[in-house]
Length: 567
Ligand SMILES: O=C(O)CCC(=O)C(=O)O
Ligand SMILES: [Fe+2]
Image (cartoon, rainbow, N blue to C red; front, side, top):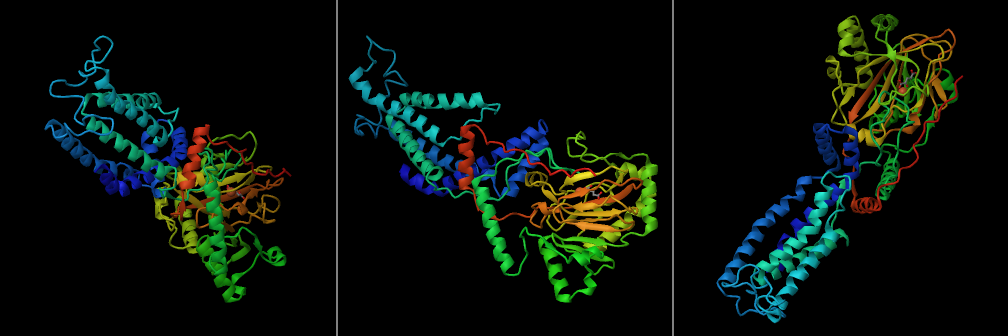
């Protein structure tokens, strides 16, 4: 009977275990999130739900099946007690147990058959009592074994760690006590139940019976110290990716290779440059290229990065992959001048921030910045029409997906879909001679992107003045820089369309030269993360469990941006 119930509820149990293992595998991320947000329960809840959604895990799937099995359990309990009280089991023994209805009876209730001891022996005498003591002892032992096998390890940092520990210790004892008080048939039922449950759980959790699937989430990295305004990576504490993640990267790479072979998006990390002569002469002019070349470049942009209007007048290709584009006279000179003057007149230029740390000791970013907030716009209304012109041009370059409406409230609206391109609050940066922004990537590391739910997908810089010497935006890995020129735009893509940041776009704002200050308008465009392909998370979950038992994942040395020497 019990076996039948177990069999019927097996698919439910399997689902429950799979869900709880998936939830367990996300625990390190959730712990880090909690450490980050501290007491902000609402935020933790929202971000946790978001994480489950990203991972494709339904935490409720874990409790639903157990709710379904409760009525079955109650039904069994009732019918067994009825059978016992009606005396139907009185003559029914089981191996060493004389009667399944014993040791309690109408005359002896509860533990009266055992306590109090008379002359050092149970009330019913050792001979009668001993067979009935075997079952409770077995039950306690079984319960201990099963909970040590199937319960997740106690997190020593959890507030209720002591309660959990006490529960693990006392629950088996309580069940043992309960067994002393009821007909042994019930104890037997419970024993059978425990043994079967344990066996099923062992099969699911330890022998690979469970098929845990979560969406690939990238390596676990410590959040909270990102490159928020296009800052340096110096304080990023990167944790070792799990073997499962490594495997998923390999699978991704294999898929990417296959896709590239099929002529689809090329995710390979090699660099494809344009002819150096063309580069020296200001870049490749798409209108002078064979249409099929431009069509394939356009497709690569759309699939691998973002769609771009390559027929915009003045557009030049500076690098093919990663794509770097410039647009001459993107903004009329007068608009640039007016923006510069408005920024200066605002009196609100602040020392440019670097990350959440605000740590400027290392002189990573020494410029000053005006963040164009609602308040700034209210104080400097002349900026509004200038900004509108600039955004209109940005839409011509990047298409309607660019959600400029989001900016009308001068508030960043978090994009949710990968196709929704939302501008962050624009900034105007001012570099005095000798000021710079050292090597950095604009894209967020995976964990931060995941935590935010979006990634920076495009950087659009518009130079507001001519800089004749120095002040270049230099691409460290690509071997060229863009010289600031009033009204010229620079467009590149800090991350791939899949949301992974593209390390090839590492760049530096070179020192503005003696007597040459530099003004630049900066717009970062973000998009929601796509749902990543499923990976088999069983290995990942097992590994993380093992790591937790060992006492945590070992942190890797933080990655450092290679700093450029000052000139
Ligand atoms: O000013 C520049 O040339 C580049 C600025 C930059 O990279 C940034 O602010 O993220
Ligand atoms: Fe940058």
